[in-house]
Image (cartoon, rainbow, N blue to C red; front, side, top):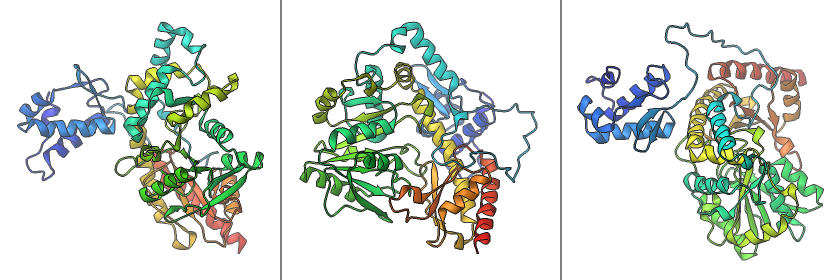
Length: 462
């Protein structure tokens, strides 16, 4: 194959495995190696290039991890369908460095619907409709489709380090529904601990039940362990919402020990931990739990699609029977139609490939957005480059109102949100700025427009 013969250059000091990986990556993105192309076996390519087989294996493994290649057992290595690619001779699209604001620009926490794998998903739905159509409309187990629960347990083991069986998995109608169900069943004394700032729907749910909240302040070292532990504690340890950052392992262990000491529970809200752009994803807090005190809450809304309205719980073994007893009405169950197709999608490996592709695309957009923010004047505020998540937390000076700035940004077509909405006293001032739905070539222009809007708002207040 003549294209593959040009992967190495004797004058390039770059390691050979990196040259091979870079060359294949470039040819895939340029369309020279279309989706579905079968690459030579590692031994054959190594012989053609005059390198050790381990060199080719290393390059292939890296491209599989990034989502460019797919290894199919007993079939070989194939190029993935990574994105629509323009014909080689087509003129490049005009790229604007200035963004014309549109409704919803830079919305935090919003996945890009344009990268949803429509065709692979449609094929999975079609297979289920053809082979087991009753699974689309009927379900016996209130914990959810058994095949989907098996796939979730396996996925949590691969990506989050959690050891669990399908019996411990419960499919819910979104992460919020799962959080509310767990709190409803476990808060027995009217007290619970929540992060401040933290997730607003959880705060509202606690308020609607007239529960007494033990607020845990979030600082530079993460969420502080309360002096008086509550029976139920809700945490976002892998990527704190909304400030970002990961809870250090010793602090996680301290929370788990405190829960064990008071016969309490930790609810781990793990809403977007797959999107970590430097290094490997941080293992879940539930992966450290040895006493069965941590309930893990996951979602498909951030990684896959809001429209499915599917989330899940991974329960300690000791809570399974209690939750099964509590599910006495149909409203406890998640929507049925998408569950078996999602199980099929995960079993085929398409879900893992989709996450790898989304992580690669979002990493590029995160980097562009963070680079643009670093160019903002220091007096406007600051942010920490966590290299994770689907939004950037931009801290404002205490004298600046994030509500006023957010209102000005909304009037200009931006969907950024204020920190103060997430704090019970509204005392934390800052802005949540998204990037996932913006194309990389437009982000810098959008950030420049946003900066001008915010500076104009500040000038009018002076």
